[in-house]
Image (cartoon, rainbow, N blue to C red; front, side, top):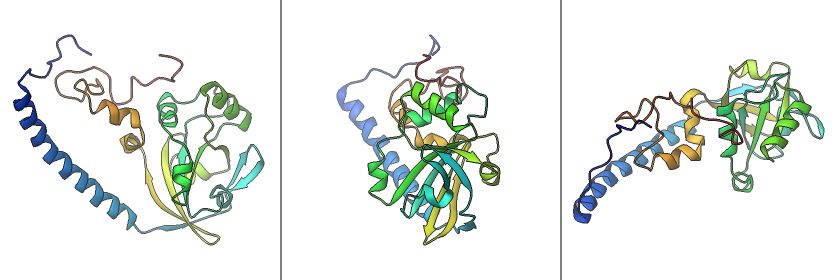
Length: 217
């Protein structure tokens, strides 16, 4: 953060409350707008997707259908860890750090898996280093490419109807911000994320450029 960053004005409690109440009106508008976008997202059409894509997990070969674990919905995070790499993408790693306990998703008939093109032993070594327990499999074949993330990252959402699988949603880039709770907390603070795009010269980093693996800060 720049030493010249402008700090918030110091005011009386009554003045602070007036400003806070005015912002609350906008926050509620944003919440309603986000709810409307979520509803529109749920109404997106879907495309039939091959359920036979293969992956390798700790228990052996799995298909895309297997990843659902019998649930109706599947969220897949496409993680940037290529064969031969010893460490994964710092941004992807920060996102996985923010994945909560799976029981909450399971309670809503939803499974989450992380996938990467690295070999399973490479994935397991990196998971152990990071202390993660999130379900993770190695992609075999063209799954990432067919999801439009060959060499990149993203989030794909699938719906299962019996043995039929449909792709319903995809996002990448800053669309992944919504999955990083750390950023949501920083957005509550006066110094924010301390990135260059924020007002007041709060930093020089581009979005995500300051992120590191949690054992490298």
